[in-house]
Image (cartoon, rainbow, N blue to C red; front, side):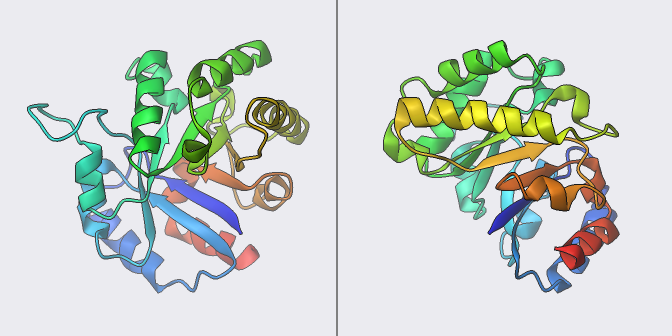
Length: 228
């Protein structure tokens, strides 16, 4: 089943997310695996929701004196199932470093979360290989069971034309690396400018998509569900 991940980033005010939640929970979702990642301030609203919820970010350490941070233990208490690590916007805004991303990746996987790792932010395939080597070195087979990799180049995040050949090339590169070093395959997703006009063809060559700003309009999501 294809995964559709809705990344709300820092959009939607309180009244808007309440309406969005009500409308989303009315939908009859059967043919896709839908994961919602609302703004972290709204995670508690979905604690008992039938929708699978993920967190856009977290702090690597457990409960403690870390003012302003949200730990993995807190996420578990809210029934959060997925985490997002290494999103290019956080790299570009210098909110995360490569070292912090690797640390978050290990801690999330070791805590049992389905962990979505974003790679390829600058579209340089040599750097993409280096990212894979750096992030995945030391991971064991058990951890890989909960890993998903998303190819998300910064230049394609919003409003750009999706290049299927580029996605296929990145998919082959990533799959070959995983097969060579771990002798297995893991889900490959794509993120960047996904909308109603291109989602079907992208899903034909991937295991799922990460949708950003386009996902904050519930009418867009209704159309996607109807189309798939």
